[in-house]
Image (cartoon, rainbow, N blue to C red; front, side):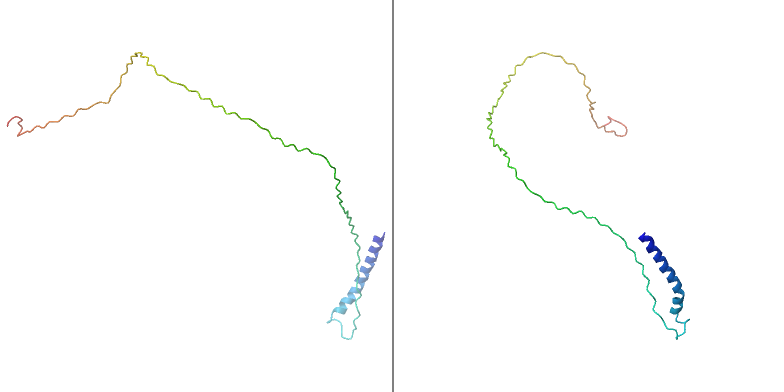
Length: 133
């Protein structure tokens, strides 16, 4: 309801401002108005608006209280002794070679590369005759 009433007052102020504006515009024009006219003060216009801003704060104050409850925890220190016996076993294998002769006939054919035997001789020819001299 208060909003509507303030809106009506705002409209009335705006209408009054429009009615006063033409005379004020002529009064502000120095070329149009002769020097003999006295200037009257212009009434200020107010526009009031109220905005409600709500802020909700929740403040926490943490209080920590320590309640000590004594409990017994057993801490065991155990030393374990493990005997270690090093047993090294050496297996000695003695080899003895005994020859058993058994005849096996194996036949193979092998291709050898060709062998060239080069020989040379010198023959003296005197006018086509070999044994002339």
